[in-house]
Length: 260
Image (cartoon, rainbow, N blue to C red; front, side, top):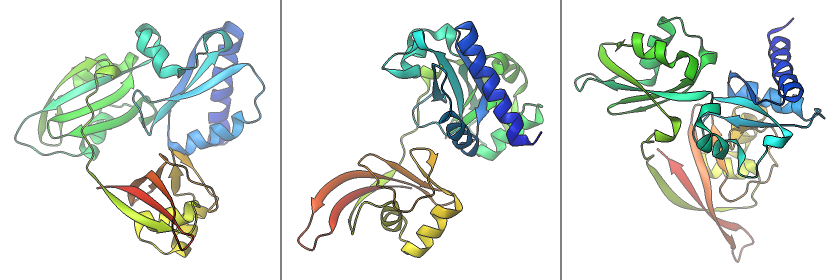
């Protein structure tokens, strides 16, 4: 079996388990590309099992697929359910506080975790700030991380387990800029947001390195809506924060948030 077929087999096993035993099940953490592959598979799925992508906090990039039997399903989604039923949530966060004298990066934390023999599929996003990091992981390995993650690079670490609802996200710096576009096509928004030619934007979209609301999009003519987040891999992200309306020249005035 290919790697892709192995992943699909695991997805199907978890989905069938949720349906047969009426229980909530989940996969390991998925990359953005793996999540796209699963979405493609589930479009053909007829079982009465709802699938949610959950990474412990809003806008998480690495998520688990949570399979929920029909009688569990709520309009508020899986995050609200886990907020009320903490014992059913498979995820938690390890808070790693570093010493005040050493600067370390996301790569340093990830390298230290890999050095402990932890596979990437067991770890979600790693959210760094000036004092340390939140490491999203499965509850089953949180204790092991806390006991063994004592250093990252040259920094000393002190770790503790916390609930994902206690994560305090560092405020992202952004600037809002006014733009005028011919239409709300994705290639137009990408061109305005990243100051690139439409040809380069179209190439990037077709290559599969553009994501809208964390899902890969390969159609340049997709319509972007107010509030949509656009990520260009290797360049950053922007958000269409406001659609002002059509101007006298027939173009559409918009406001885009540019994240630094």
